[in-house]
Image (cartoon, rainbow, N blue to C red; front, side):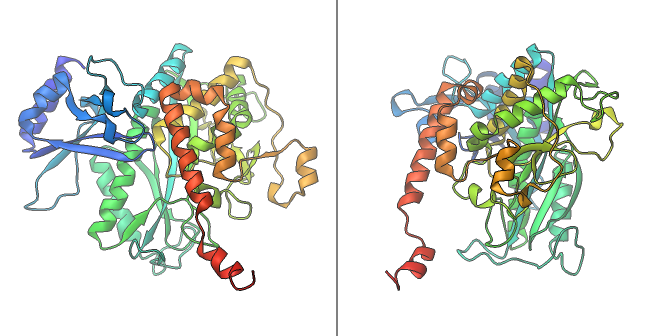
Length: 444
């Protein structure tokens, strides 16, 4: 941080009459953490950071090594547009987590993404992503979710009663400098999507965290509840986070080759081949909850088969053909992540898989343009089409043996993440569900 950035933030705080500054960071699972400071404390926070107890944060430190420092990143400063008249005016900044001696903390997801971006930079690439985060609006947060509407894909009024909520959310995001491409009603009842304009991956991870909170804040202020749970409704499509991604050198999109029949360069093909080859082992990070695998089943538009295509939306990786001759628009769309992941870690493992493909010169096979859902198991096996893990337990086993994921996350985050997921899976396995009671109790 240079002196000019610090002075610029201090000046804005004063000019905007800010009452409090919220310092944000995430735990290993991607839950947003925050504490507030007054403007009087900001100068010291920017210079030295603010101390906190890391032992109370999931995946951080043990009690005997709990002292942590949250160092605000002044480039992430923005006013939060949620307050109304007579409420305190609040700004926020994302933080990098440090050890007491000022070194980066190995358990900080934001730091993990920075390390992967540095590796890409050393190879000559800047990593850009454009995630599509889907979510649901419900009447409340009770055990039986009640949808607000029965609308479908791109529906407008009267079915899409949540259109004003999306509009307010988009306006709030724009006020915070987060660019939105468009928003619309999704396929399932009360399901919605707001697409963020592609950006450098660290800024986008910060934006994704801000997006999720903004959606929920706007919903609460309007007396409803928003959820990014991957599969909240039985028999309906779940919510995904299709992630468009590409590597740039300056203003040049390295994925584009005008002379290739798919308009893909060797770099682009090897990157996609990396996503395909390592999809199973990174799945735990991009779909990290028991409920994530209720979405990743055939028949609900979720990609479960490991392949790539151009038009085929049943494939795991798609190369969109909207603007086939526009270099900057050439990209890979990775379709299995869901919006309840930790975006810092999700972007890290996707990038690591793609870079591995480039480093090792992976070859990309021909695209699968047929509907894979309609193929028999024998047809898929004959064509070498594998499947993603079928549940959290299987995903844990795949990731636990992955050196690629360990390298991408670092030992600390890798081990804490695996440990947490094993506990979640064990708790799920011993739970007796209502389905089991209703189906088996009367007959067994």
